[in-house]
Image: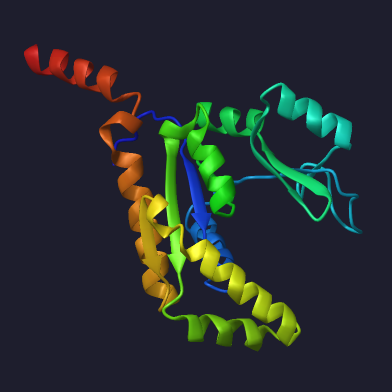
Length: 213
């Protein structure tokens, strides 16, 4: 297939905890290793084994606030006393190189990215569980949280699910293989949209000149 120059996409993947978003993200990146996973900036201290620029961009609170003030964050939020956000620079560099960036953010982060100056390049996908009963079963089967924490996650899940209609696409993850195929289909189609392919005009002009000879 002829490759046409295009700018990179901002692929937002959101879901309540336990719906399978992380698994789908890993499968999508295995399908296309050129996908760039968005690295967030944070004001919390690095944990053992975490690498600057790979796991997070670690910044002081003053540095983080300065980046926000200069418009260098696509989205940001405060979580348990620490700031987290998506630096604009690496995303724009990937776009110019024709690489897509995958974002694992909640509905609030998704809203901010869609409202940014890069919003026209966003493809947003929300992943739903087949039922809340199944979602709770998945959370319990992890054996990572207490019943109280799981109850809190379920309450938060209901709030997150209420924002499903803000997204371009919705996948009900009742089968991981079918959901992966749906995700790949969405990204493939979005990459082929006429307005996404910056090199299409020059290609067609060259094609027409060739035809006229």
